[in-house]
Image (cartoon, rainbow, N blue to C red; front, side, top):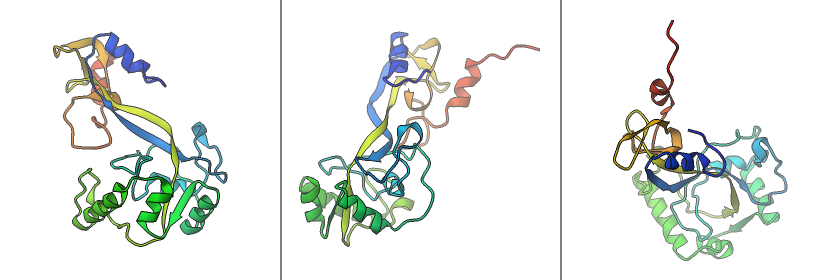
Length: 225
């Protein structure tokens, strides 16, 4: 399937007769700090030179502008910057530049960041998930290592630089695009994030896992020798 910037591939598949399904979810593939002057433009126009990008990819919590969960960001995007740095010093610089806020308590952080009062309760829920190893939003237990209990606390503002849909085209086990009456659309296949409906192992990141080879096998005919 052709992937372009504005969903042209999905639109093409739907126009060809594929059933529209599961396109309501979105995945942020990469984000960048909004206005961090010490960062520099890297590959694909993404701001990836600042060491804080490592924190941006794997923070304790991703929340929306109101401080609400769940909110998930993929680890895809530019490679992590190399080198070492002091997290506290880097965050203090981000605070100085107005890109992040700092607070001694979660209540203060919520006020400074413009979060709703529910934010503090959601952090408490996350801390319980760390204790039990069970996250209602699906975060694997092996990543539930640290609670957010002791300040200072930081919240940084970020913006999306790469956004994609999850799902959009119903497929069968061969990744053939299906019409609304479950008939395959001749010559049309959907893979990756565009494919929806093929049973795979449970995952939050994608509705289909590594579908390229099974999709390509029937789609590509090798010349006889």
